[in-house]
Image (tube, rainbow, N blue to C red):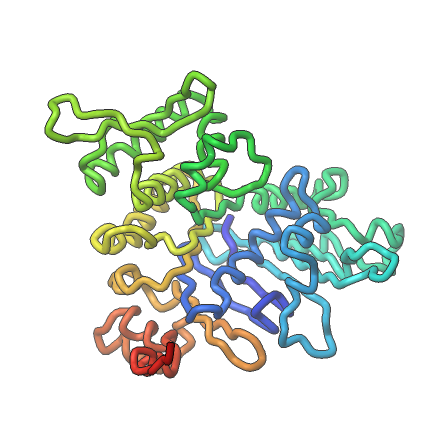
Amino acid sequence: MIVRKIKLHNWKNFQNCEVNITERCFVIGANASGKSNFIDALRFLRDIAKQSGGLQEAVEERGGITKIRCLAARKQTNISITVELGEDNSDKLLWKYHLDFSHTGGGILKNQVIIKQEQVYSYIDKKNILDRNPNSKNEDVETIKYTHLEQVNTNRNFRDIVVFFQNIEYLNIIPQLVRESSLMPGSKKEDFFGRNFLERLSKLNERTRNSYFKKINELLKLAVPQLEELGFVKDNMGIPHLEAKYKHWRAKGSKQQEMQFSDGTLRLIGFLFALIDSKGLILLEEPELNLHSAIIAQLPEFISKIQRNRKGRIQVIITTHSYDILSNTGISTDEVVLLENTQEGTKANIVTDLEDVKQVVNAGLTIADAVLPKTKPEKIDSFSQLTLDF
C-alpha cells in the first residue's frame, strides 16, 4: 500500500494543498517553502497511530496547535489532513483517511485539541467505515479528544490504515547525535536514525542485523572504499557501536568506530539501513547532505532498484535541493512536487501540471534545469553585491 494523494488545510505552510503522490516522489522548493512541513503531515499521522502516541501528544510535540496552524488561515481556523491510500502496483484506491481538528481550552483550562471530524472511507466497500464528529452518537467532550487511530478496540475495521501509518519511517540523520548516543544511552526521545540509531540496531535480531550489514558492506565498498567489514559491537559497558576496518599503510588496517566516521559516511549508512529495513513509506530529508556529488547522482536509480527488488514494495518521498539528484534522466515530471511561496501560504503542484516546465523537459533538458530556477529567491543575485558597514 502507498500514499496516492495528500490534502492539507491550514497545516503549517499550507492553507490549502492537494497533490497526487507517486511511488518515488521528490519534493522541492525554496528555503522556508515547507518541504519538511509537507512530509511532517505524514509523520503526524504516524505519531498519532504509534504505540504510546496519540493526537494530543502529537500536537504537543510540535509546540501546540498555534505552531501547527497556517499563518495564512482566515476565518476557518481548523486544521485537516486527508490521505488516500492505494495499491502499490496499480491505480486502484483502497482507503481515504480524513482528520479535522481544532483548538479547545485556554485560561484555567488545559490547551488541547478536539476532533471536528474523523472519517475513514473504503473504496472497496464504497462507503464510510467511520464518520464521527462532536455531535455523533456516544461522543462527548472527552472521547472527541482521541482519534480511533490510537484506540485498538475501535479501529478493527480499518487496521490496515493504522499499521501503514505506524510503519512510516523518517530519516534525517544528524551525525553528531549518532556520535553522542554512546554518551547518552537509553534516550526516550524518538529520533529515527539519529540519537537512537545505534540502540535500534542493538534491538534487531542478530541474524537480521548481520544480513543488513552484509548488504550495506557491499555498497560501502563502492562508495567508501577505505572502510571494510562494517559491523556492530558492544563495549564493556554494553553500549552499542558501529565498527569498521579502515584501510591504510598498515597491512591489517585499524579499527574505527562511529566517533571517527565522517558525517557523509554516517548519513550514507543510515540511508542504506532505512531502505533495507523499511516496511512501507520512507520520508527522506535531503539525503544529499555531506555526500559526494558522484554518490548523490546515483541515489534516484538506487532507490528505484531497491523498490523493484523488494518483496514488499516501499514508497519513498524525498525532500531535496540537489541538482545532482534532479538531473537524473530517469525522473519523470509526475514524480516531482514543486512548492511555491505565496501570500496565501505555500502552493504545491505536480510538475506534470506546469506547462512551462513540461515544455523545458520535452525540449531535452532535465528536471533540475527546468524546476530549480523556480526555487531560487528572486533577488538572490544581489546577495554578493551588498555593502555592509562594520
